Image (cartoon, rainbow over all chains, first blue to last red; front, side, top):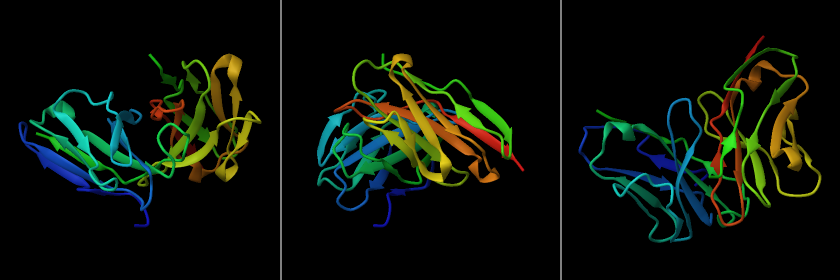
Length: 116
Length: 112
């Protein structure tokens, strides 16, 4: 596609429910990143992939959070048993270069998650 | 722990004023440095980046940044701001093999 596409754009869920956030990166991009951004804060790193391999998941807050990129393209960030503190904007980005090589990150519009 | 600090949370300027936004990082060794911008209603986009070479980097829309290694700083500057520069600005840093780490951001409001 022309840019990084994220869905859903907005998700409201009840505490305890599982949610899945999807990211469709720019075609051919090697690396894919997930960030979380709370209001008034900068993007907080969660995890990233080079192709289908998850290279770093040190930013995932706890084991309720997981991500996959099984075919090296579309990625899904899953949050199990959501809690109110999970409410945030979840941002996906992709790059032509492998992670850490300094490639420009192209961001999507984000998925706004609200947990009631 | 590695971190990126942006000292100004909110900056308010009149059009034509000069701008300087501070950014400091705590990494040792070789780093890649970036400034990203988010205009109202839009997604994050790259403003400029530094990898090596000339420490004064020029980006889009008249912005520039200077890497001062001894001060671990990468401040963003613009000689004369415009109303359209109203946005949130994020400094970001990474090292080889690691993901990009962002500062908390600075909101710039420019009045016409």
